[in-house]
Image (cartoon, rainbow over all chains, first blue to last red; front, top):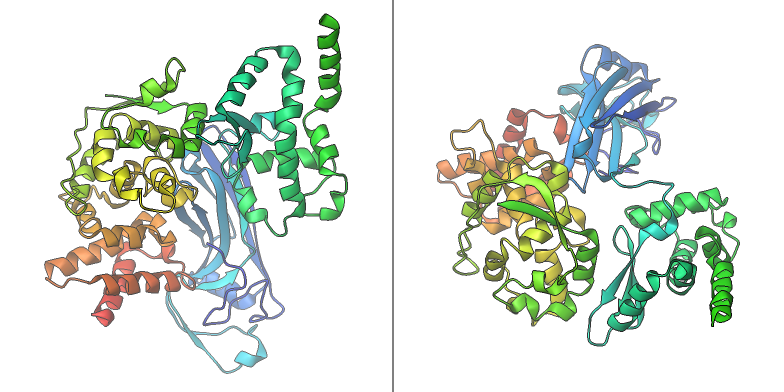
Length: 287
Length: 245
């Protein structure tokens, strides 16, 4: 559920409009996880006396709406108390989870009016139905990860696979899934498999295969504008983002990404060029 | 019947090679074992079920989706949500146990005149990129999810609403592709009212059903439908249907 800047047919206390003035609504959520359960501690507060009065009379309630498109999970947790906790099975979530926090009408209200309404609404009342939004806080997301480990090494988010098509290009890639799939033509894949058995040549493979793909990915990240939403769905992006952060690069702050993508890619995968060249020198010496 | 998973790596390989494997998708016999040869491509799950014999479709309109949903959901009712959203499980099933069914229900020949037949194969035999839709597009996963969203053990016939859902294909698609349908209470309320209307011999047509879906969607922007009881939801759906008919 995406809430930002929505128009409502009645005044709503929100961070993006001034329907209800000099008032705010803040909902915080602390989460912890056991092996099978997510536990959430909610704390909600509004400075609107009118809404607080409705909550006290149990005509309105605090609510958190959870939605996870990967697992088709959608559920509302609500309470008349400003502090409350709830839990949900860890098995019901995976990937991106959107959380919206609200104050909702708990019953129909015939003549809804608050002393804090904007003067434009003076003298007006509204018919509010059970479930209608009275206040909304900023939407948030979290990622319910099953395999994701932010400390994972960058090469682990790559998978090299044979492209068996008749006119398959020697080297291609697909970054639309959780991993970055490097597609090698059938011949190249066989060579790759043979070389990968030799531990000493691993850095060379990184330089030849992982490096160009990673540079291409970093170019996408560096040059994209407001792309976060789509890329965030991919596990590989979240691993790279957390590794970039360790290098002082914030993907949402382009000014921190001033180094060339080639230089950054070398750092991300442990500078394989040096060891690759050394491996080649040693290889020549052995001859 | 032992259910297995296809390995991550073999799933990736199979998926990037759909185009070059188009001919294989025309084969009546299983080919996946031979394709991977000695490469260990599957691994066992802890899921054990009775054999499931799906009813073979007779044509594109006589497809027995309702009967097959009952069979798949009954056999695999104990799947966790995580298992039911795992592409590796469904890709194993579409390429092995239910291959013959897939050939009849989603024959690759019907996609060959499309621009990108590989996209249609991805949609039916694998998971498409949109994960939410993927669950109700994969040829076997969709049958499980149809059962999951409509099975109601409080009814004398727990699959009563499943029958409504699949009475016309358009209902399943129009309903399940709306985000409000992720809440089973909302989905069941819509189906329950459709069932009552059916009993009153008052059938809603395709256009009105779409208008109803649009209305609920718009309403969900103002009213958080998830807070309503099934009775409230049914009332709301009934009222709207009556204005439409």
